[in-house]
Image (cartoon, rainbow, N blue to C red; front, side):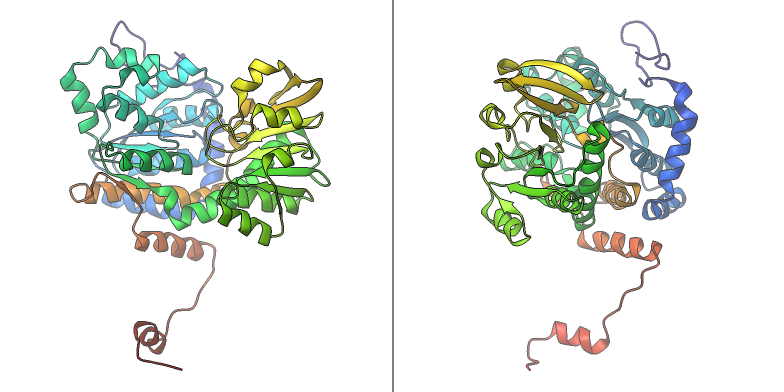
Length: 453
């Protein structure tokens, strides 16, 4: 535990676990800078301060601990929630921000940049021990653990979580899960996992798929991921993008955004896909579409953005040219087959802070940030302006869960269209953009069926 964690004997509960409380001043300055670009969340926070819609609620969030997330946490606290926060990725925490939240707002934070596997899950355990009635996830790790507990699949839990759960009675375990009235999920990967749970009939409570909101995935996934992924790669490598051949694995909204930014920087962009509709769209957008086995020998830089496993496998790596660079911008570090690489190649050799060299078949391959989210590991994640809309969705989703808890079914729901549109309206208003409104004649025309040409 860090110096700021509460110490004690067996059963003592830590109030936080962060790197260094002395970093708080820098975290405060950077969080305030981000807040300048988050006018929608600011307006929600002002309303939450007046109305306190989350009063009495305990909220556990497993999110990237960044300046933008800090503004969300403060907004939830302003709404009356008792907030506990842990990291959703071992490399994405900004330690100064974690310190700021603890020192200046008294929020419970369990996150240290570069934490090992055991510590990561000890922090998940700490968030679970908050005994929340609302959870927030970015990748469904928190909700996933709750469901393993509910289904009594304790062997599938990470050791720190399993050891704690085994100390609880059956009644306490049931109360831990049964006390959750609802959850929200931030990212594509998490929504995929949750929809699979719902399909199998095991979902224990309603979940709001924030990622399905238009004001989230059309902007965060496309413009946020596009810019921040390129930013992370450049910071990690100092690579010249212009003139290089960049292979983009996956043409969902994240892949679209990154392909657009890479082409804008002068790259020759190739796209790999498994979905014929997305592959056709990529071709119509002017990209060359290939199978990964055909792209492997020609790419200089490979970036995975799929939400799936083993997108780049050992057979692809063997075919790559000497010096090829591999990065991932999907949520989990499973898109590049790192286990296969470790069994096959020599290495790793650290050549830069986020760059490791592997040798396979006499060729050098460079893996960035251990295959984890490159935009958060090597850079600062999405710009605050785009996270403004994503986290406005999160804040309003939490309020919606409280308001509709008794009516929502145990399924994956999207945020109401009206709230989605309100976020867009507030964002336009904050940026000084005015749009037209329908005239009475136009409203009548759109609502009619008997007006012809």
